Image (tube, rainbow, N blue to C red; front, side):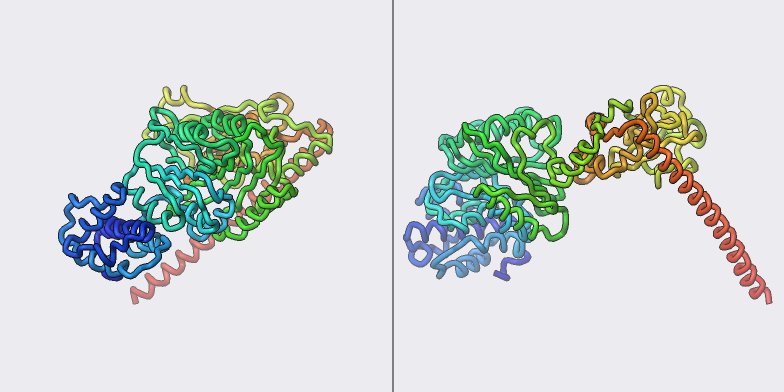
Length: 556
């Protein structure tokens, strides 16, 4: 296959898969086409004629595309396949990545596919529906683990993906049906025992999120007690935009599992979540949940999750602190489905607080929440009102010397200003930078990437700040944070986060200790600052003496 290297990758792969599909059809039909009927002088046209005669028009090569002389490529591929008695589909991923250096359809990271495939639980007979080409290597791995005796139905709106899917999957099944077109409009007629789908993330269909359309259409084509294996981005778990979708999952299915996997796909860092849904009128009382740790090698975690899910299906109880594995009551799935809140460690923290006679109250019961404003850099000035941004906050202090300033009166009028004692909290990029506004930063304008948490009457800001830095609160923040490249925490979500409220007398004692520590910390920071200043003065003097020495020696 070395002859194929360096060729146009689209052309090579298209020709190769056309021959490959023809070889699969040849073996399945027993026509012995490659050895007895292939016409070398016609090349790809001979292959096309054979595929059309067997009813596989969608697998042909488009001969109207002019690629110049391809006879050498055809000859190499034909010689490669001529004496094959069996094809397994193994060459397709290799040709895609190694020979063609072609990214191809989105798929899972190859090293974790075997572990994820053990979650599929494909039926051995009946109908399997696969919708879109994304993640086909996972389906292929699942089919390798069973002897499927039913029919696999593959749907795609991209015609060339039919050929890829056939080459990859047909060797592993007796019957495969291919459908080209928009199945969301031309609704499938078949009823499926298992459906696998990875809808196009972020796409719209008739102005509506594709996830809603896919879920509705595919649910209607799922048999009673059929399984829906659906892969979506993590944002579906917490975003208000998908609240109705979560409601559909809860109302229309018996939810078997929700499993969150970071960096599951090649060439993207978007976090994903697997939903295993069963169409059943009888709803389960509990749900298996898991969140895989974000690390380079996830195989061990995934094997642990797979084994635990198998135990769960057998009726056994199971849990793990790392990775997060737990079985939760279905009725606990309310508005926010982020999985970290269902972890054993978070629940234990919450129970300890409650049993310690601490009230758990929403943040907005104790504080007002204000969102900052975005000011264009064109308005930055050397003088005027200070404008605090995320980069101006470091080590729980505001760096006043580097702050930008705003002089335009209209911009200042429209902006949001902080007061002494306010708490500033970053909600975009680096989440959770925090500072109490000092007197000399009061009345500063605040960036849109910060929020102001303003304690209500008699609420100590140092108590709120200490609470915001606690593991209990940080876990809740992680639950609500979205975004893969740029992290974002919606200000509207922050007001509902819970904080423990001890009795007033206990708060006073705690605050006395915290303030003493803060004063000591400020003294230490002041001494460090003074020492840094002295160090710089000494370095400057040393540099001056060295430079003087060099100058004196040059005059001699």
